[in-house]
Amino acid sequence: MKSLVFAILASAAGQPSTGPSAIPVRPAHTYSIVALDRTTGELGAAVQSHWFSVGSLVPWIEAGIGAVCTQSFVEASYGPLGLELMRAGRTAEEALAGLVRADKNEAVRQVGMVDARGRAAAHTGSSCIAAAGHHLGDGFACQANMMLKDTVWKAMAQAFETTGGELVDRLLAALEAAEKEGGDIRGRQSAAVVVVRGQPSGLPWKDRLYDLRVEDHPQPLDELRRLVRLNKAYNHMNAGDDLLTEGKTAEALKAYALGMEIYPDNPEMVFWPAVTMAATGRVEDSLPLFRKVFALDPNWAELLRRLPAAGQFPKDGKLLDRILSLVPKKER
Image (cartoon, rainbow, N blue to C red):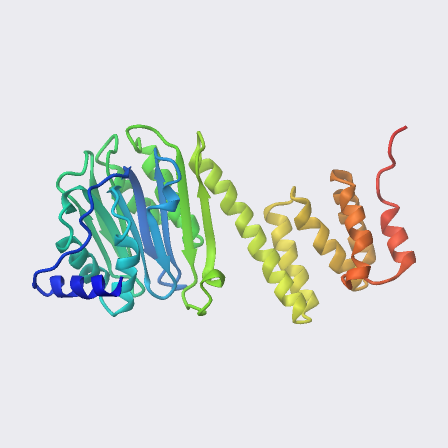
């Protein structure tokens, strides 16, 4: 890959080169957005299409480097090569220009890029199927092809710029705005969103705050929003676990409470805060939570029985019996 990167760098400087030129075979006609949150430094990408598993092909992203969406007749190498070029110090515009220059089939490509400083670039090839176009904004790029109307990418930009909340919320708003404008002329099938931290940790799997895909669904954006909501709840739960490991019990319980508030019907969100409360002396506060979980599924009671042996709950028979007395009696 590095030799090809060097070739593209040469091409961007005006020298002959060869690069992505495979015959286009994956027509992921779609709409997408790449963006930087200037407040947090987070980078994100989101996409929706009438194409199976669009999230496995279109978005590419790396914390501290940039984000890429490659679509239309997809040349997937725009993703890793674009990131490699930005990692080497090229701006998003320079990286994209080099890749386009080296691509014999650039006329059917559509690509959006943003680097870690918020410099955005996009390319819509002259042979992309109408309606096709893109919009560049401060720290983001929206791109769409095979749309019902040519208002899609501008509507995406407006929604992104006017929506508050986390970067993931703004990305979803952009996708939903595209759908309200008619979206993909063929309909809808799959969607994805990826958001990474502003500061890379050196451990890529820890840098991903959201990495969600809806592969095949009649309403992929509705399902994606549900998954984002669940992801937010688990982000708080994970934060609670980390705080608990550090001995910060009060802060951990606050984080757990936020998770329960976001997704109160998930027993996982209720059980572990209850365990923490009971184990740290807040037994009375824990009992309503245990009662709720046991009513949903008595297997949670069996899990509780197993925790003391694993060192995850006090070896206190009276405490355990008191909690387990809340398990609903089986009807005879």
